[in-house]
Length: 263
Image 1: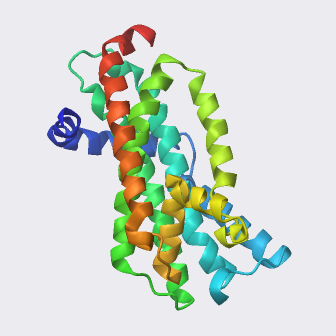
Image 2: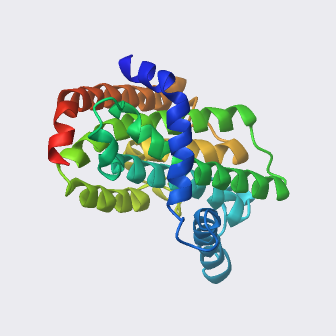
């Protein structure tokens, strides 16, 4: 609870620094923060162009590929960018760590806020495109998935930010792992491809990344991963998130006093 109390107590500082974090990433360019939105948007559109118009990949359930693809990719971009930036945040803000009075606990949240501007933009793009194609979102599922996504990111980076601070090489390993998770998560491929492998399919549905991507996609196309089998996938997702937060919080608090010495 101390972590959440610290966030609430220092929410204004975190918000101001989070906005500055986003602006400073592109401060040396003429277009400034526009690049933050333009780069991932073009990246997503290139995937749509290649898979829909070059490879002729169909969407699921009779939907255009763009409707099937964009929600999943938007959630993945949110996960990947937020996890990587928050995990490296303490090293990036080493000058704050060395100030004894600064609340170190909120530093990953600062980077998360900085990343969330682009994340929310991409989620809005996905929602608008799906609505243009007359696939109306289930607002409650959309809100739930956004809440679940940021909850998971906070839990995950509570651990990874501490490890990256103590072991700098872990940042490179995490980047590789996120690439592997991308291809292991049904972002550009469908879970229906595992229909003949029920055990593997079930394992995939238990994975937090796959759960979030699939749930957000189903907000537009229908589906039941959230409530399937008495909500077993949802129960497991939140169990993993809570355990990861408890573990990460323990590691963070135990080693927090050493952060200034290793930076």
